[in-house]
Image: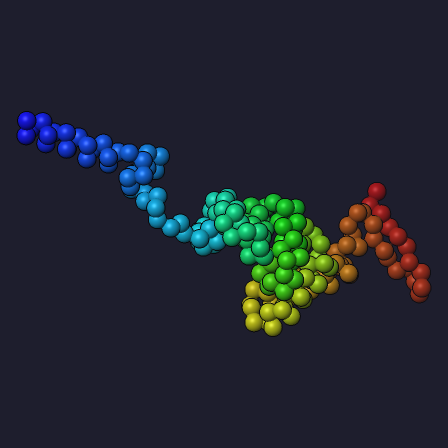
Length: 185
């Protein structure tokens, strides 16, 4: 009789430990405490970006947007991940939306400038980098370097002596005030 009562007591404790809500979830992976707090998606995303895991970082940023709401931080982070993945159209669209939220957010301004440089919109990128430089008060070396590059490329595109021979045409001066256009036919 005592053995039977003891067996029932052990069985009831074992069954209680297996029921959902008793501390163990049936769907939780082994070693994971489902009651614990999750790490912020932005922090996880930033760490993944630093390690070169851009697709996983994008997922973490989407999770952060779901947790915190769509704001300038999450939009800028999503745009940066898309830039790293080479999705320039999506990155530009999302970064512009981030700047609608806060036009003074320097990381979004700088990353939009990078996207524009990659897309060949050098003049617009130069203006964007100037805005980032002004908002940052010239403190960031990376923004300064981006601005220098945009200025150099925009000035090089105004006059480039190598363009004279591109396309098979060349302008040659024959005598005072007289020029001939030559082609390589």
